[in-house]
View (cartoon, rainbow, N blue to C red):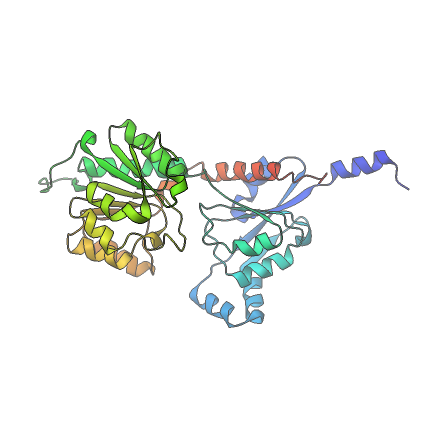
Length: 350
């Protein structure tokens, strides 16, 4: 029979296995606490053919899973307690179920994206697995990009040319006469309001739930309810900023009526999910010049179609998610991942 001292020594020396994206493996091993054993996985492309195969049945889904998920393990998959999901990962409920079959000891999931709309969260919660997104990781960077879009448009920088004759352009504006409405009072919404207010702009906040109407009141000159006042507010402002997650309630919330209310002097800024906006209505409004301009992180659709619209549509500016393309992003994500493990008490003693 082993002594109590021997059992304590065994517990201290064993390491808790976690799984991270292969491209982040070296950094994660460098930052990992001594009791964490880090292994990697590589996630292959998920093309249209693969999606069709996955929908055809469980057998094909298993074949696709085996081809797509490649693991470089120091410990068995069955012992992995935490998983870091890469931001580009997209997988269906069927694929998530196959992943969970291989990770029976999984207790924590870190999703390196804002929001949880692209992850089958219910399947993880059904197994009492904690799921955390990267809330706060990119909020400041997105906020800075939103304010940069406003400043570029207010001062006519989007009309500048590299050389030759100066282009014909509308008059520029002054910040103290600029009206901004922000839909959402979360981290990004409140921080954007704070920066805009500091620059002299007047900011109106729009929230979905009445009980949240006083949230962030110090950052906004006025708070309104988005479901009732979005069109009315759009008529009153120069810039409409979207800072809400994509849900069944918010999908398509900026429709033709809202775009018409913004009008030729109004600008839409959506660095959140593309699905918040009725995309055909947006492109049509810009083509007809019934909307002043739009700054969006990306468009929905196939790459070639998106590129064509970006070239053909007047006053449409795509950021291509560059607001979150920051050099230290992976370092910050790794720190957030290990902080989640510490809060979850993922250690040999639990």
